[in-house]
Image 1: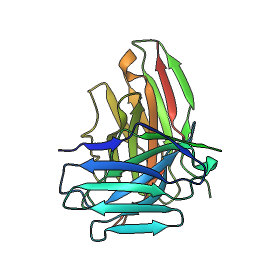
Image 2: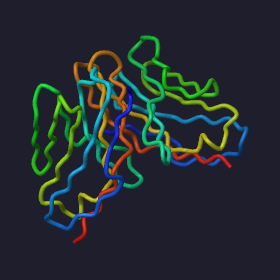
Image 3: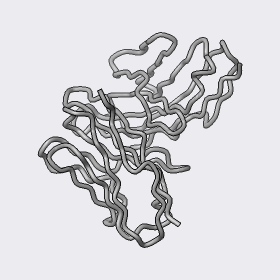
Image 4: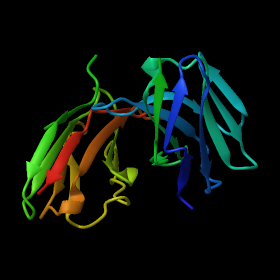
Length: 113
Length: 114
């Protein structure tokens, strides 16, 4: 019930294309869904996050789409750039309590120039 | 200001030895988390500290793992009698207390147990 499943494991996209990463969760008590970006040798950094009261959130080229009934959420990166090449993690937590994050397995994104 | 810092950045140890990993959170952050990032396992929660409250140790994988947070700031994660399966990157994160806590991660300590 605590799992967050993420796909694909790796993704190659041409510069200027759209990168899409998908996640699914089981625990309906989760009510906070962040995405983290991690570069080699660095810790994860928060990219964008969503609460379940909205179906979409956009920040610049990054958009989260959220489907509460399907228990799925996805990250879309528009106009993907080589600098976006990194590992992306979706996560989920409950706002009440410790807010400990349950992470997906990660997606290694490569943007080809 | 400075972000979360962790030391050492790399630690190589022999099986059976004890190791201590240190985390310096962002000044003023009352919440502190430890996570472990290992190949094939992703990132998993280990332990959480909030102010003077009792820590949430629910993610610690065995009693060989322990952590403390002194003076509400620096935290140390201790692994006793290390095993090869303990090899991973140990990440520390801190956040302000509040309704939604953005967790800021340090660069991690890469632990290799030979």
